[in-house]
Length: 68
Picture: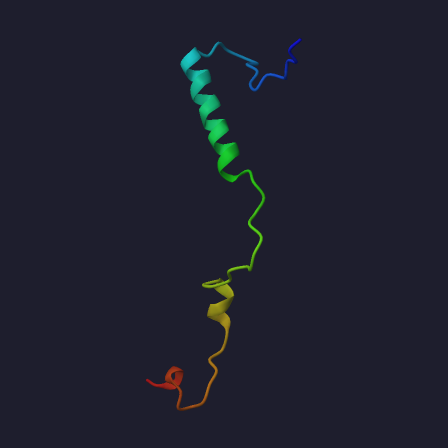
């Protein structure tokens, strides 16, 4: 005895062609496998965040930041 699963797609309105259903299935499958996973665990990369532009300069008056 084989177990049947729920359909992947259900057409509610209209009559799409076999090619249109195939294209939609491919797009939805690719979208689910590309970004549907859990985010990577590891250190957060905050390099280049917008808050870095609001930080004040630091260092000695003779440091590279204060040369002009």
